[in-house]
Image (cartoon, rainbow, N blue to C red; front, side, top):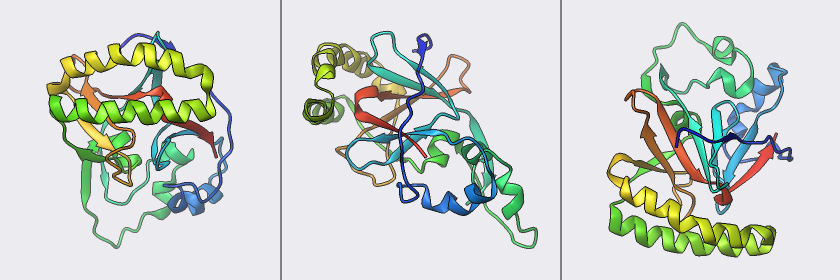
Length: 206
């Protein structure tokens, strides 16, 4: 899903106690910068990604595509882009040994956890997930119910047709019934991107 229109920036409000942000409070205090809107999955409110990445919305408004990159860094370090400054330089301790971790920045930055699905298990998951999202939309965005139910089946069909290429990730809480991010790579084989159902996310700005 390499084409699409840019996702509009949505302003919202969140607090210091938002999941995944407590560890960033001291760095954010020291680095005055514009806050980044965050995407949380709607059930456990796990932080899935933020606006530091290249983001696109599908033409039918169903899917969000987030482009990442492969990175290596010391375990426990925070991506500077998340806090708008050079936090890693501030917290560096040259007297301590560190373990290097490598992977997709979206996964590492937001503590996503890999899980696994085959076509049968993903079909069972997505049926229940669509029911849960529909119920949530009926409460919060009734105007999105019909478009979601009309367009979601086609997106599910695309996912099932490409399921062997995807890696699957839950949020930090590892809720198996929550939003699952789907990871794939561009044709160059080195550029990762993730797909999320838009209606399974809430957008907040800290």
